[in-house]
Structures are given as C-alpha cells and as structure tokens.
Length: 114
Length: 225
Image (cartoon, rainbow over all chains, first blue to last red; front, side, top):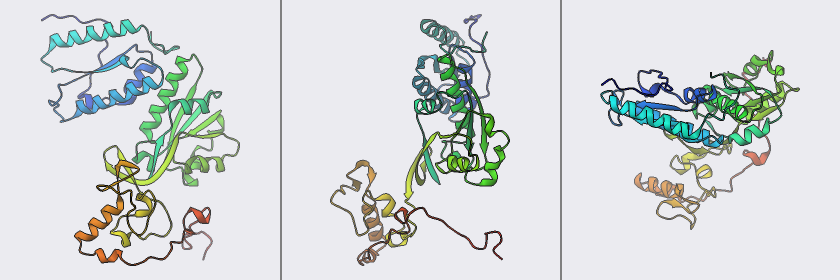
C-alpha cells in the first residue's frame, strides 16, 4: 500500500489498549504532547474481550479531567480499527493531526517536550 | 468500608494555591478499595495538578507517597523524616487520615482531597452504596438483615412512610424503599409477624448523639496485665 501518515505521530505500542491507563495519557499531556489518541481494535473484537472498551472509558475520563482543567478535551481521542485497515490507520492519523492543528499548541507551558 | 469521593480539582487547587512544594499522601485502606485515594488516584491527582499549574505558568513540585493506612500511628510515622520539607501536605485518605497526620506533625498544614461519605460496599463495579450508619447498636436481625437506620431516609423503625411508592423512596426514584424490601423479604420467609412487635424507643447514645466515641479492647492495650 505504501501509505504515509504524518510524521508528528509518535507510536507507542501496547499489547492491548486495555493496558493503557489514565496516568499514561495524563503524563503525555503533562510532558507537552499537543494531543494523544488511542487506536484500539474494533469494538466487540478485542482478543482480551473488553480491553478496548476499558480504554474507551479511560479516554472518556481523561477528557473529563482536561475539561476540568480548562483544556480542550478533543486533544485526547479514542479510535477503533482492525490491524487489517492500513488505509484507515493513515486516515485516522491525518484526522487527528488536523484536529490538533486547529486547536493549536498545547496550553501546558514549561513542558519538557522538544 | 469507608467510602469517599474526591473533591473537585478546582477546590483542591484553591486550598494549596500559595504552596509550591506539595506532598500528596494516599492510603492503601478503604480509599484504595473505593478507587478514590489509592496509588492510581494519587498519581492522577498529582499529574492533574501539575498540568493545571503548568497551564497557569506557576511553579509546582509534587511528590507522592502512599501509606499502608493513615489511621494507624505506626504507618503515619513513616513520613516523619520528609513531611516538614513541604509547604503543604494533601491527604487522599478518609477524614481520619488528615487528622492522624495533623496530630502527628503539628507544624505542617494538611488538606483533605476527598469528601468522606458513608460506610458501604460496591453493588457493581464502580458503584458504592450506603449500608451502615454506625449507630453503635446493631439490630439488623430485627429487619430481615436490612438496616432501616442507614437505608431509610427517615431511619424509621416500624414500617414504611407514606412516601413509599412502587418499592421506591420519595426522595429519589432510584432509591429503594428499604421498608418495602424488608416487608417483602419477611413475607417471602413467612415471618411477617416478626415485624409486628412494638420496639421501644431506640437509644441514640451509642450513635454520634452521645459525642465522639471510643472503643477499648482491654486485651490489646499495652501495659494492661
């Protein structure tokens, strides 16, 4: 397919999105990420039954925390796609980068990020 | 267990507004079980506070520590060497924690990060409900094992009030009328007549009405030989 996706996206691999915790998303924001998204398997197709659904709840909770902090909750998102959907993966990366570009840089100053 | 809810971030931030170096102390007891003030919640609050301060361009230095329990002096003593290095200390334990800390370290300021709400249990993952009011004289065996003191809005002891409708309490359609449940259970057991007896006025001396309570177990008190 030789698809490309924006270089701004840094991938952190986990065995299942169920491994992603609230603190991981918060730490990324705290360290200066402009946005974070979790790409999990399609709903109902988690190898570990409900890892992606747990991740969805955690993303929702982080969005709530960001709102409480006066930060746009759209900086954190959850997407679902299968490992066979390469084109969709690139599409999501572009979609998220566009969304963050519209929001601008993170309001979290003095961050450690480059 | 003791159930608590975390205070809003705004309220916590306002309490320590002028403090730069903060210690956040969690508890591995009840507040860990009700997912309010254990290791995970301490880390989440610390990160949220750092984000808030960074966003406002203000300085903050937060350290975290989770004690085995904050309601035992032997565990509270574990932070004795570092506690006075901070401008303020936030406790994520129930209301007992910040008091034990305040009693142990008289020069430090302690703030509660949670609102202690009730004695209860988890009815499903993420949902906790009140079951005990700590009245000091347990009589649940008189009511089919269900406590009308903790679970009836009026703590009635002789049956439901006029606000009972279709098994629900008038205060909220999601609150069950515990007297409806008590009567139904007794009917199912064929023991409804157990509820007919007139009970004398309950003494509330053993509850909060008798003032702060104390429990002494002679066999455990050191020096009692």
